[in-house]
Length: 252
Image 1 (tube, rainbow, N blue to C red):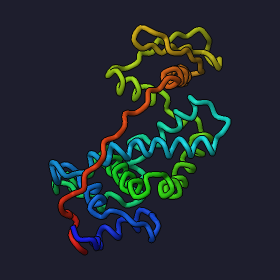
Image 2: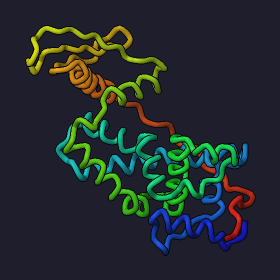
Image 3: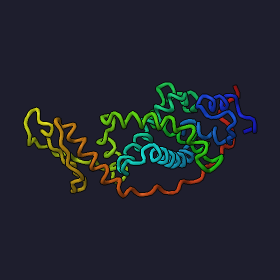
């Protein structure tokens, strides 16, 4: 690919809200915007792996600065929501990234799946990170989005779906789902009418109470989530990404 980027790639950076003076490897950005359906070997997969790790670090730093008094479990739960596929796909769509993602035409006509949009955004994050190998370009770009969503989650705890978060962990680590056991020790109108236990691998991870079964399960899941994330393993070091041999984004 020539040193001068295509107009499409230049517009993509502008649309994403990145600073005009940002210098990037244009071949690498082209690669980050290429789905495997468009090219089997030269696509965003390696960059996406690195971007995932960078996003986790950026989100963690942002949350620790915004909520210095929060517990590790609470910060882990917020971070999981900030960097979930659903949240990243929504952000990618809001930034207009879907318009620049190269895919097989049949996939584009059906709509790009949520996970693919999230993966592409992670790959773009990796491209930006690799220019400086630190977060000096990442944090100013993404912090406003992280802070806005984190504040929404903090002020409206019902938006934090701990059952989903717990399920994501157990599926990722063990390819299995937690089980909930419900009893009804209270009466109608009692704020602790229902009692829920969440079990995983023959171990009770937490017990919660609530006026409804759903709320009791969420309370139990929150404790279970905190128990499993207390000793959360470190992510493996990501592989280094390759540069594409040629651009798949035509000059505009």
